[in-house]
Image (tube, rainbow, N blue to C red):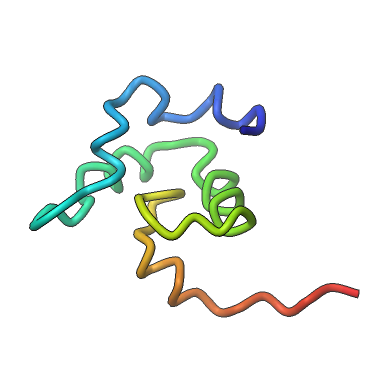
Length: 74
């Protein structure tokens, strides 16, 4: 992970909070992300590495898939 991880609000949280199962919708994790100084870097990292589970940068996997696709850079 990059150096942003050391400044992440979730660093001292239970990791299971960010990988909800069943009826859990990740709202508790997203609340942590809303107050995080590095949420944007977290989201960018998850997108760059193809993470398809969990809450990253305040977005669920479905929300990340719904983001507009980035065009390839030359």
